[in-house]
Image 1: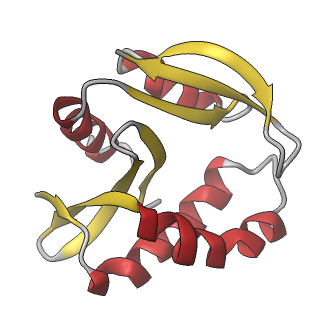
Image 2: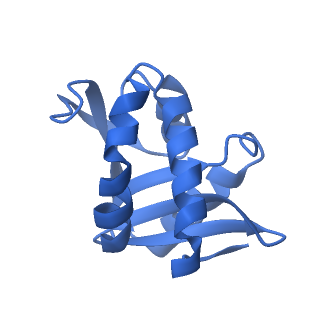
Length: 141
């Protein structure tokens, strides 16, 4: 079931975020992500509309959308990946919002392919100012 995030969900969401972001972005130091933990928790999640995928009372993944247009994060618990949870979350927001965009690290090939397979197109390549790594800006109309 996909539902709106509730305040009580934040610790589980952040646990999923830190573990899965380190796994997905192994080309960036673990310390970089650990250093951004509080920024994500205290700045990005509060300004986002976040939806969680819950299965039998356990959150398995989440997606956050900023300004009804920008996918700020999509993460699935590392033990639940490959079960269609990410697809369910992306389909949920594709049906909710007309135009969506996102940025994804170029070296995160699995995620780039995931978004292309969901109908997103690469519109620009740029360097992420914080990390210094190349990322794609992608869009789905």
